[in-house]
Length: 633
Image 1 (tube, rainbow, N blue to C red):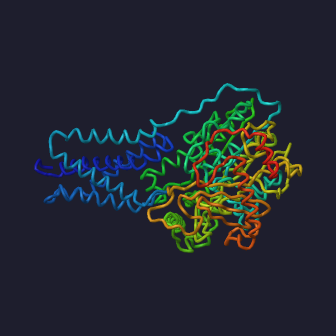
Image 2 (cartoon, rainbow, N blue to C red):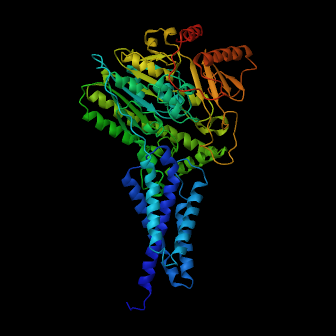
Image 3 (tube, helix red, strand yellow):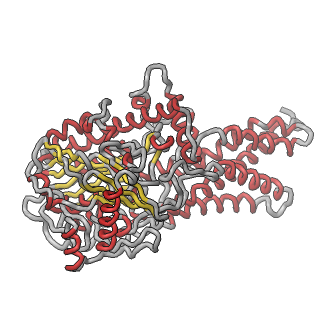
């Protein structure tokens, strides 16, 4: 090649420009991920972050080399960057983001790339910034990616043990099926075999025909199960997204009594950054795998091209649990918490063999993925997708529960293989349900207190205390799992809780097990919707608080605007119309009961300031008022 041949300089120039393009793309991606990273502290392993940055650099170089011939044209220094940006847009913008975020985010990221890339090329015309600009770019990208890691909160450190566990104390394994509604399980009469293993396990334990969540989304629902109080009392909800440090958690109660405690969560809302894992001596934040990966374009592109098999980290939860179980000494009983989020949106993030498990022949996996994205985007905008897309999503939801079936069965059958199953209290419950097109095409959860969001599966197996094969008709609140698990383990609950153990139901004592079937939802500030969102009905509004009380098969819902509704959820679970006009005396009775409970517990008015979330010792007068209402004191 002659010395006059410009090709080597063209290629070198393209490579340097490509590295610049990749660098600014990395910086823009890091800035996009920063809000979630700060919210949940860690976003991904450093190796993942580094691999994603290298992918962005390689992509930038590949694009720049593809457009390199333009550098030989007249005004090539202008046409080449324009072509590079066009190629990046063609690759980046059409790929759907597998986690919910406003539609403006991807154009904003690309706009930032355009500005930064253009600025870098412009500054390189002057001699002084030629070496400074790349260094500043690398430093800015590294600092932005590192900030969530540096922001990580201090881990809860267990105090000295207060006691040795009682002789013969049982293990406790609490499995939460995130976002699984009761009516989609074959155990509860559904016509698809979505969770056949649970149906078999329930033959050795108790199935609760009506278990009601204290809240319709992850954070407050888990916090109620972990503290035994209702959302406005523990304070972990949309308006205050962390658990108050003064509340004694279930894990702390077990740790202080001598149990080993371990938490494996697929959901970042159940992590140390929200205070939800306080009391767990071992916390493996398995949620980071999905939450971190899904934010990077490299992962998005791989999933879009179907070269990455996805899940919501359920496989990692089970495998980590099996490793922990195999490595423990067994000298102390354990309290273990496993959270599986496989049936949570986006619904298409499933291993390939599950994707079309319940879909009719001829439906492609690509069609299922597109339907999942379309329904999710439509829901964030307050509109409906097509009936075909909605049906595909319902099929995916059932397939995700079947994936839960396989993951959970592996986790629990390991106890049987170790000979520990019968000395372990097994609890399988959902934190809340989900909407699948009911109520004007609503999907997902978060707003309102509708039946599909609150009615969850609950199975407890423990041969020494729980009779085999029984079905419990008396309704219970999942907030009462706190005193129930302590009761079954032989421990007393701490002061300040608002529910009591429903273990007496196993011997037929209904009155001794009664707790208010109270549910609450403090305002969704609009984080799960896009600009221009239009509510589809009264339970789809932004910034509205709801409170519900169910008694004797009737359910009263009130909101912070002063409105109320009366439903008969067991007779008509779709709750299509308000029955207040037909039964005003029942609505009035439930309203009076709800007002008395709110006053007795000090929960506060829905249109007032949130109450202090610290521990509250119920005084004798309050206890007597609760007894008069037929509840625990």
